Amino acid sequence: MSEQSLVDTAEFPLPRFGQHEAQTISSLVEVDFGGLSDQGHVRANNEDTFLIARFDRTMHALKTNLPTDTYPVCSTETSYGMVVADGMGGHAAGEVASRTAVTALLELVLQTPDWIMRLDDASSDRVVHRLQERVHQIQGALSEKTRADASLAGMGTTLTLAASLGPDLLVAHVGDSRAYLMRDGRLQRLTRDQTLAQGMVDAGIITAEKAATHNLRHVLTGVLSANEKTVPLEVAWFKLVDGDQILVCSDGLTEMVTEATVTEALNQPGPATDICQTLVDLALKAGGKDNVTVVLARYRIPEIVGSV
Image 1 (cartoon, helix red, strand yellow):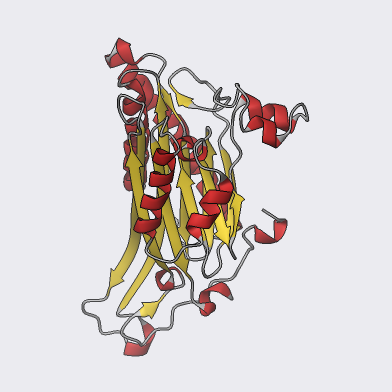
Image 2 (tube, one colour):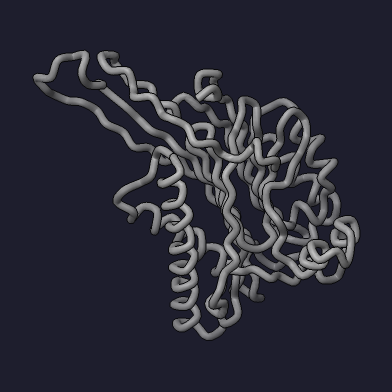
């Protein structure tokens, strides 16, 4: 993404009181979601896990003697989250790893007493700090599972998160599951594969085209597991505009389907659920050599939100 696409500091206007409902910036954004996961044609079980969630902070005024023009009857802040985790470890270990990571993350969010529902420079830093803490806590949850069952030793998982609050988008990433932005008919990758092959690309040893088929493209340099002391969590902020689409997927899609074909599918009209089915079908038709998981969000952002 260009620097222009990074989140800008903005002043958030106070809700207008004296109305039946104070419309906050985040509550005006509409999102059409789709999500689908398939075992594929080769794997014995599905080691992918995904989650789509909506989070609301709501106030309803019930009784007061305040003047009616000094408070909102109702006010809501709304955010959305999408997570894809691709487990590994053999037998059922990969499935346990991905499910443990996603459920632990959700539990940690729900246990947080002060959700951050508006963003500025200071709160954005707090979000990143919390994510780093939660990654370590997820590793702790994986360690507990391993101690309880020795057959799970060596299990791990990728984790790719996309969370939106109004027009602000956070992408956090460990491993080689991916997040993409579709804007104005063009697809752009928002994450960097944490693999040995991508490291060779970064070092100028091979080209990105060669990395796509290199035999080291599946060797992860970043993974959530009980054995890793340091996790290379990558976090980035972006600004969404009306009509944007965010795709989060496991490598079961990107190994089987080219980005050009993904672009063609995302350019099709229809609900996000149908597009997810199309993408999964394309991966299965191409061989379905791995579990395939896709989560898609199509955003409708009113002009009043985008201009903030």
